Image 1: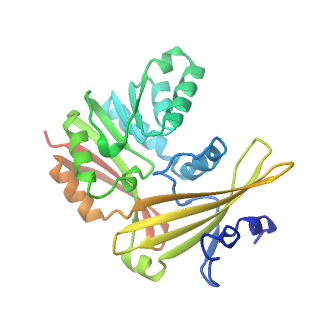
Image 2: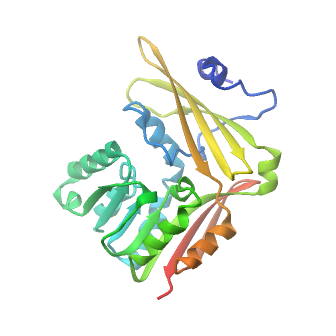
Image 3: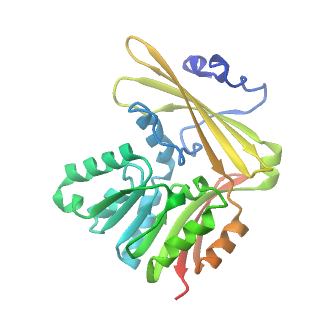
Length: 286
């Protein structure tokens, strides 16, 4: 374990016990637990937020390929700072980007404007929580990318899916991805600890210990990030927490069917022996 991890062990914050011996601290640079349901706490947290979404970046190519078959307009739900919306606009698609975080949408607008007026003119941003989503337009493609579906409370998910489906044009598609866990794996290892360095380019050295705790009765998980950011003169410690829900594939499939969508395609990517990433492409029944 690098010495740089020492300042960020959870025990130093007094909020969580230090991982027990044998808890399985994993030092990794990819497939990190995601921060989909929380916004950056401050400008410095943007680096951590982007690093956690980084493992999902390869999906941009797959989603762009799908958009070429469906056409636009595109609805990007939980858009964040535009990792999908801006590349889509650069490829000529009209995009409505929806997110609850005003600062993320400001970053998206700024990025689009820096590229040029043609790109900025294709992007419309809208601030709202997905649980309160009410749409006005119609779309050829809707995206719940970066495992955003796991950030929606299960009780509110059917309503969200119905709202999206009702605003898809005939032959339109909803594409979403999520992390699928095998139940025996969660029972065997309900707590997982990760350690990684955040790639930064501003002279700050940032290391993070992430504790992932699954609660099977509520089918939820909580991830707490303990970060230490060391500059030339001082070290700052930050704690961020996100709550998510474990997606049950059979339940999700039933909810999609009830919303008037059928699963046309399914792509799986194995993360480890007990976990995989699943990408679904769903079409309207009409």
